[in-house]
Amino acid sequence: MDGLERITFDRDVAHGRATIRGTRVRVSDVLALLAAGVTADEIVEDYPYLEPADVSAVLAFAAAEADHPVLLAG
Image (cartoon, rainbow, N blue to C red; front, side, top):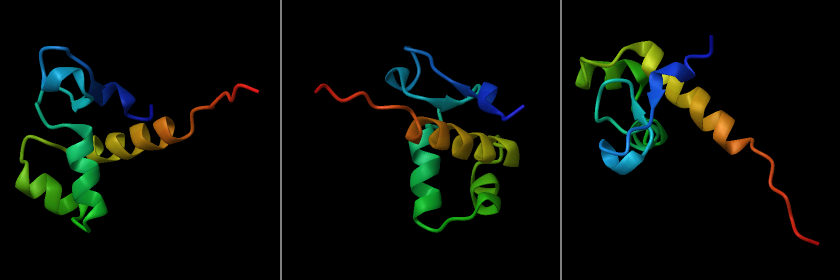
């Protein structure tokens, strides 16, 4: 399993944005931390309710979202 089941959507949590299972931590926040150079270990240390697999799931989700087809009208 690629861990995507760890990414959840709930319109009552974070305005329906992608979050990590059972938390209010948004996928975009974890991606921003990673982009800023924060390591997965540091993220898990700062957010003890997260697991390393959650950070991996965030990356898998971002990769899947970045690779969706775009249809151009023409």
